[in-house]
Each structure stands twice: as C-alpha cells, then as structure tokens.
Amino acid sequence: MECVMLTKWEWQILCAQGSIRMLGTRVCEMPENPTASADAFRLFAFAPQFNLGDAHSYVIAELLPGWRTPSTKNGIWLSDASQCMYLEAVKSFSPVTTAEIESLHKQAVVGAILLGAPKFEHLWLDWVGQQTQELKRRSAQRFVRILELGEWLPQVEEAVDPRGGTGTSNSGKRVDLIGEFLQNEKRISKSDLARSHEGTCAHAIACATVWASFYCDRSVPAENSILRRQLDIRAERYRESQYADANYLTLEFHRELEALAQEAAVAFTTLLTPAALGIYLRFSIAIQYGPPPQPSHLVAAILRLQALDGGPAAALCAYLIGSKLKPQFVHRIAMALDGGEYPAVDMASAAESLGLVPLDSFRENLAEPIIDSDGVGLEVVVADEQTGARQSDEAGLSGVAKSTDPEAKA
Image (cartoon, rainbow, N blue to C red; front, side, top):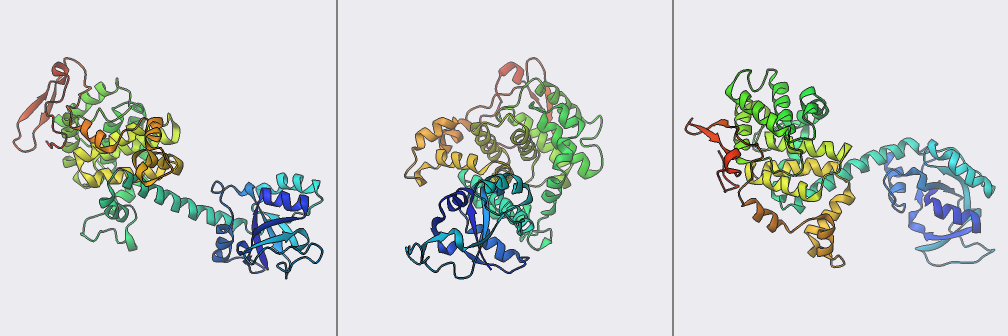
C-alpha cells in the first residue's frame, strides 16, 4: 500500500475542497502490516516538520492504486514532482496515535469523513524517541562549537558514550566514570545536602562532596579534616550568596575543589572536575525547574571553567548543558555569538536581546581580578599543593582574589 503523512491543515483542505497540491515524492510504499521501522521512518521523515512529537499535527492517508493518474473529471496534471491529490484517491485516513482519535473525529464528522484506527503508533513513538536523542546530541555539539571548544568534542563524545562499550578511550583513560555520574545525576541533586544548598553558591560544594562520597563509598572529605572544615566554612558563607553567574569560582575556592579532587581521585578526571560537576548540575536544575538561566551566565561560567580547569572540562560541561537546553535557545545564542555565519541575521541585535557580548570580550573580563564573595572578617586556610604551606584567604579585607591571572593553578 502507498501512504502519505499529511499535515492537519492539508487534510482539512483535502476534505473541504476535494483536492490538494503536494509533492508526489512524499508518498511511500508501505507493507500491509507495518512493523519495520525503516519504512515508517521514511514516511515520517518526508512529512513537513512541526514540533517534534506533535502527533496532533498529522493525519496519515492510505491511497488507492493508481492515485497518480490524473482525474478524468478534473484533468489537472502539474508535473511528476508537484501533483494534485484528490479525495477519491484516498482509501482511508487514520490518526498517528490513539490520543488524537477523539479530536480528529470531531473534525472528520463535519465533512462526513471516515477515520480509521492508528496503524503506526508504536513506530511513531520509536521515531520520536530516536529523533529526540539525535536532536539533543546535535544541540550539545553546537553549543560546544559556539563556545570555541570544538577541538575537545571527540574526547567528550567518547567519554559520554564510549564506543563499543569498552569503558576506555583510545588514550587508555577510564571513561565509564562519566556514564555512572550521569546515571546518578538525580540522586546527587535530590540528596539532602544538595537540596539544602540549592539556588546558592554553596550548591557546587554540596554536589561535589555528595558525588565523591557516593563514588568512594566513604565520607569525602574525611570528617574533622582540615579540608572538611574549610569547605564547611565556605559553604556557610556561600549560602548567603544567591547563584547567578560563576563569580563564586574564585581562585581560592578553586584550590579547595582541587584538594577535594585529590582526596577522591577515583571520582574525578580532567573532564569531570568538581567545578564542572557543580556548574553542570546547577544549570541543569535551573533549566528543568527554573528560573531559566541567563545566556550570559551560561557563557561566563563555562569560559571561567575553561580558565580554571582547562578546555576538556569546559567542553564536557558545555556538552552536557547543551543537551539539556532547547535547540531554539542554543540557536539564538549561536546567532548572537556567531552571527557572521548568518547573512540574514543582525548579530548586534541578536546579542543585545540576550545580553551577550563577543567571546573575546568575555575572555577579557576573565583576565580581571576575581572578586571573592566570602564575606567580611573570616579567614579560610588553604593548603598549598606544592609547598605544603598554609595560605590565608583574606578576601574579606581586600575584596579581591590575590591572583589576577585566571589561568593560575594552585
């Protein structure tokens, strides 16, 4: 049998006036009992695109043999590509899924049009699931490239979805860790500690320590350790600071996160760092539950992560966030930051509407001293990794981080 997927508007016009003009190549040969996904996927792919998964926008028409022959009654023939399809050439109409039967039946009754049972529902759901995953992947890739982190994209994609299920990359590094982290993402976000800090700058500390403790199957950092006291003091201060952009990621705080990564080395990699984990989970929650993150906050956070933890960590974070963002949102950021690729787009207007500036300007801002949001009169002791010396964060007195180099590492 031959079938074509009509939009609801095409179907209504066909029923109302008896014919529509359409591309004949949209018609697909289908088996009588469609079970093979390849046949149905071709049928769905040839339909005009609406929002993915919107089954209400379509009606499937099964055609009679010889439907391409011009009607002797009307005698209209346009070309082999563009043809008129007549109502008398339709054997039956059917909705895409069961959920659409009632609403479409009300419209069908008006024109005395018969409406059959859906034949392609399970195949449609398979198609939507496949297309949704592919759309997320393309959106994630695009977001990484927009931020000029594309050189690390192959490494990130291999880590997120190891080829062949080996759990190791070509360089021999362990990559199954990220998959396990993603499987436990909800568990981390819903932990009592993470939820108690949600919406504040302390959330990154909570998520990193919850993940490290879960993965290592012990309390990390150790109870009564110097690092535990440092992070507890900082978390208490950061509870007073509402999360917006990444200004809480000072060099002092980053040294503490690096110390956490050293204490729980098996739970982190150069891709999955404590800072990357914290940034991703915070924005993931904001994307899912609101308030929606500002584009400038997203870009600034990822670029600051690149300055502190390097390109691979920033690329992974951007990839995971990009897979959660709506493709329309990623596209708007692309027009604002990469408007030269779109001759028909006013890049300045696109950037202004989102509060964005060129990436070079973002990176110039990162070269300025990072303001430490710790508060006043409190001191955090940080162990220097190379000398073992103890350094004091006196940001409460100076108001700025001691180092002005955003690339500096403790």
